[in-house]
Amino acid sequence: MYRFDYHRAGSVAQAAALLAERGEAVPLAGGMTLIPTLKHRLAAPSDLVDLGFIEGLSGIAIGSETVTIGAMTRHADVAASAELARVLPILPRLAGHIGDRQVRSRGTIGGSLANNDPAACYPAAALALGATIVTDRREIAADDYFQGLFATALEPGELIVAIRFPRVDAAAYAKFANPASRYAMVGVAVARGAGTIRVAVTGAGSGGVFRPDVLEAALAVDFSPEAALRARVDADDLMSDIHAQADYRAHLISVMASRAVADCLGGAA
Image (cartoon, rainbow, N blue to C red; front, side):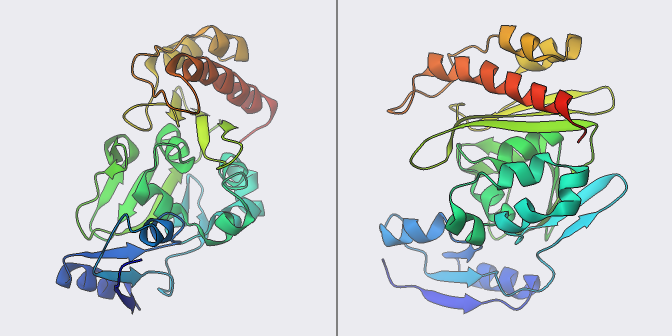
């Protein structure tokens, strides 16, 4: 690990100022990706700005039409929220299967979305649900936020402060997890709202999380597990690596979508 200076920010404004003053500083949320990266000397920031002690950045607010989750809310808290399980159960179910207990106790929803790992779970839910990423400067629609592998619309020093999810008629997430890392080899989120069907896939796309047109079109006509199984996603733009080839991931997308649709039909979201 390279040497760095540590700062405990007391407010979002102070964190933003530190990041602006120190050009090679990076924000520290849960640290579940950043700390291992530092330990392996894959990054050498001059400063870490810890967001963990800023009041008001965590918590879950249930509204009549939306759910707002603070950026520093930990996966374990999302997973344990009974209110969230009642109005938007896709989120606690998804959070409860991220990594292991230690990761869920430290990792945050804002950190996950800021990192935008191509195999992370939250990006699929945010994109399928049409979430809004709220930063200290603006609001960004999920369709505009995700811009490639580990790439987002965030500008240097811009901080996520909350994520706002619309309440929908039904939504579910199905993941085929790598048995070692628990990251998604393929994860599919399906959301059905007022006249809309949105599907998002993580873990498979060579450009990160994406919406598969063929699945959304098929489910708009026939919202059933069988329709999802019949829809074939093109493997050309999917990843191939030591864990799975592109054509296998394409097959898994249909299978995971089918399971997510079945979950949607089995219980109200």
